[in-house]
Amino acid sequence: MQFFATLIAVIILFLLFIISNAVKILREYERGVIFRLGRLIATKGPGLILLIPLVDRMVKVSLRTIVMDVPPQDVITKDNVSLKVNAVVYFRVIHAEKAIVEVEDFLLATSQLSQTTLRSILGQSHLDELLSEREKINHELQKIIDNQTEPWGIKVSNVEVKHVDLPIEMQRAMAKQAEAERERRAKVIHAEGEFQASQKLADAAEIMSRQPQALQLRYLQTLTEIASEKNSTIIFPLPIDLLKPFLDRFEPKG
Image 1 (cartoon, rainbow, N blue to C red):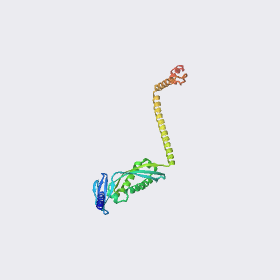
Image 2 (tube, helix red, strand yellow):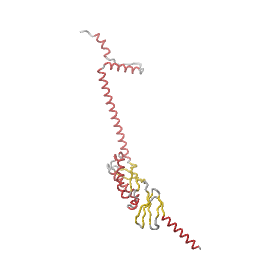
Image 3 (cartoon, one colour):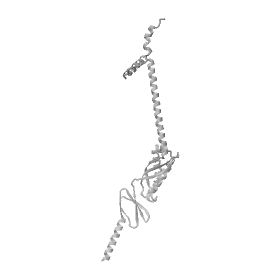
Image 4 (cartoon, rainbow, N blue to C red):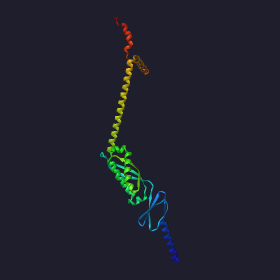
């Protein structure tokens, strides 16, 4: 009796083992690459998948976008500036069978390819381009990595240079350069202001030379501004044109 109970328990365990290996459930974002006796037969999913126990083997692949952080890389730019740069790569598996069959480990392969491409592209760029044309460099990195990972069934959607670590000496030099640029702009703006003011003064002088009354009105306006300051003593020049009628009386007639 005990032997039959043990036999039934072994049969139940064996059936459970067969069922667990024969029935698989894949989520919406998962695909199963099926191998039968080592031969690729199909890619299935999502939903319920039935396998032949001990004959079929399934490799599960996720189709969701993977965010991979590229470790900081030592880069020497085209103008011989040494710096550390890291980036982030966004990619996803498009063809699950290629990602399993064409490359041993598509995650490791994509990571290594991203590192080498990052060093190569940034090594061909100047520091100013790296700092000011970040979008152009990101697009170039994405294009190169995507072309090289396409045979693996991987689509690289975006590559972003995340952080550029400059040496202390270069940071000081750039700060001095920025300060000098601000001083240059301030001097240019001041010179332009002086030039515009001189043009306006020249225009005003020309108008007053044609209209002497305008000069007298300006003179009286200046006196009004001085009087508003409540000074105890005011010394101001007197235009000779105001005294000319009186001087003419004392001149001898020819």
